[in-house]
Length: 84
Image (cartoon, rainbow, N blue to C red; front, side, top):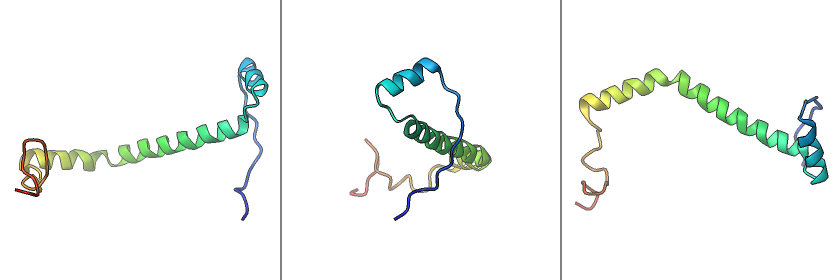
């Protein structure tokens, strides 16, 4: 099994933060990679939501006009349920 392809890069960090990380034996590369991956997921989600905003608005408008198509079988507190 081979690891992921890695590429060296240069990152500018706050000197005190970097010194503290080294003192505490924190793997700065691993932390940076994890933060970068999280930021990528968040940015992709935000982009997808923006790209589909019109569809979400159209669906919400349809539901406002017509109600939810499964409203009579959706289980909700005080509402209809599958056991009715």
